[in-house]
Image (cartoon, rainbow, N blue to C red; front, side, top):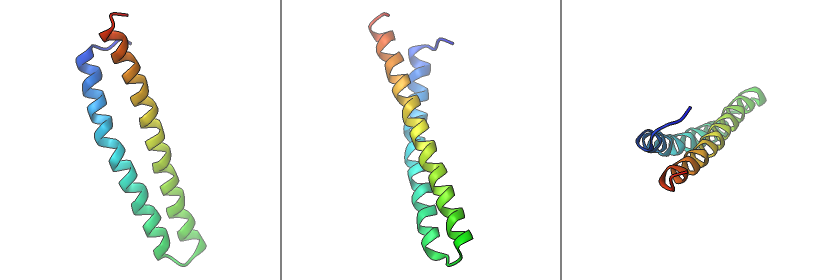
Length: 77
């Protein structure tokens, strides 16, 4: 699917808003893990933190793809 430059820029802005939220959520879960004593609770929060890290990585990958498409559109390719 091809997107316009405007659509790509809007998607980029949404992702740039989402990335810090993923980082914040990861930090929240890591801090929560420190407050619990049972291995199950700790593992739950560490698992959730790891998922947020994965979300951030996915968003950064998508952001790179968007940037590549923006460059192509701006260069007329």
